Image (tube, rainbow, N blue to C red; front, side, top):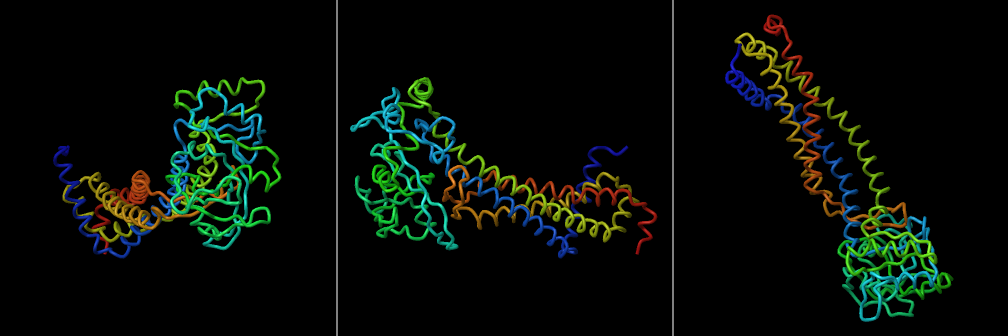
Length: 399
């Protein structure tokens, strides 16, 4: 019976020898490590898209903000509210008040076609008509170039994300709305939120351009506090004059991004699994070659009294070391290549483009390295078992 101390000493000795012989198999080892690095880089890169979209949505939400839509609409594109309904919403208890009245903005949401700067293909860009309270309801919004649009005029301000991703939205230019040029008089930022993907103008002017009468699609409000939401919602949903749904901004934006995030995560998972299979086979090939090249050495160690356990662990240690090295390289490469990279994609809830930045978080890198370790473990397990089961006499006679 081998004592635990002696057994651990055998593990350390065999593992050390195994790792020190890696340079003798540098080509195969590097191939396995870089294969795993590729898997991790792709996985982290794809998931950073979902992370970036989630971050954009979360930055759009204020804890004391609420969104009101027609009951059953689910999104602004499917919603519709009349002037009388929006006035009732604005008069509801719990809404914060500013110098000009309640912080409630009835809004109109339409889509215009503009080409993407990167590809030249047309994309749906949101054009939002707002009321004066909108700038206080969304208190993170700031005009960073030019000036706000003037009420009652064919003027717009453009979010920095939209200006970056779509052609024709440069400050000082103009866009075609309803067959007429509307001047771009300012650019605005919104702390990285979804509003940066939009174009804003006066709701009444937009209503006239699209012949919408006095109708809206949503009401954005700022409440006295987050605690006021429950009473605010109860009062609106129990009012017989209304048929509305009421969301916190966090609920609303989370729901808007759920389908897109889920799709990206599923596709990213499928791609990662397919690539991981290839990386596992690469690791298996590398470790089987390593065991084959060390047949005599392993047999000699067994003949000298080394147990099967240390041999198994030594092969696994080599495989895990290569995997962790590849995982680290892949994680760093993903961070350097993707973190902060800007793009735009379609929001399936509103059928409009959302500009966002990829976000490679420490959690994603750790997840990538964990997956690399799993690939290394699976890739090293069977060769390790084979090494431990080799008949000593046959192995010693191997050339």
